[in-house]
Length: 410
Image (tube, one colour):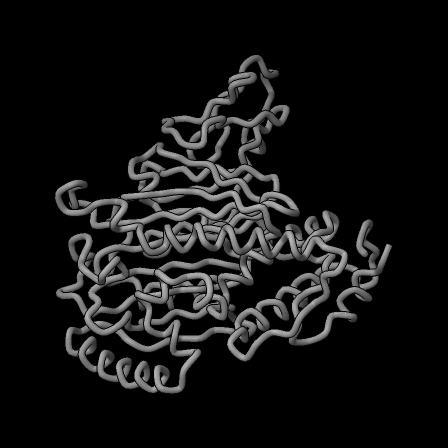
């Protein structure tokens, strides 16, 4: 056994993590308790539960959470654990229910978790203390966030920044046009480190680089100058349309995220193959400005909205060497499939990129599993990944005995 504090102390700043951080089940368990379960996590869009009684399940760190739409249109987050003897109540990933009825002994709960009926209990039985346990839940611009901690961290700054940049897209009034999942055989930190940097974009994502002009700007001073000039001209044109531009960074005690509007490349209306429009304009947008709205926050909440569609990603650790990547694409609610949009055309860029990322993350994990793996230095373009790793180590040490021992750490 090795003390966690000693393992963290041996970590060299500016280098990738030691092998055990990516392979040790004991550290994975700490990751869930001290990192994931303490943060606001994106669970899904409200468009998954459009009507009162609609629900879906979100599973994280062994906990099943019911996200259900209430009669007043609000969203409730309930632990999927009956207060009688602990059976799970909702057994299907999605569904609709006026009341939640445990399939074991038929205890009945309201959609806010209140226990309404319990068969054959003593006459003096008080139902009020036996409602379903609730998780913190917030909805901003049609995006559902949950936090499973007893006390949730502040949410207001993140909500304000998301609303400021995404409100013109009116995501709450959109519908799902495509959704897919990938189970990646890699530790969640390798997956997230990959998505926090674009150092790998040139070698591994030719489609992405053909769309986003900033990807190649890292590799050429000439291309970097051209990108800077293009961005300045684009910003002026976008502002003339009344569209927000710029960036907000919140990497301090109050938040760990950024949100931005940035251009795609000259001549491109949206993030599609060839840059052509693939769906009707979203929300309050009056024209194509060739830009995207993007949000990224720790540990990994990541959304991208073009003028005509949006992509929402969700990253869920499953086990030490498994991570679920879920991607959902939205279009305007009144858009007609086959007439106004083709789901494969809308999802082309990030669907292709996600498949490539699954491959490179799994290759990365196989290499890290080697006894010959040693932490390597981050490049000058991997500052976001470096910062994420520093944040992660800080979170890992919070809230526990700094000198505790973790079984299996090597």
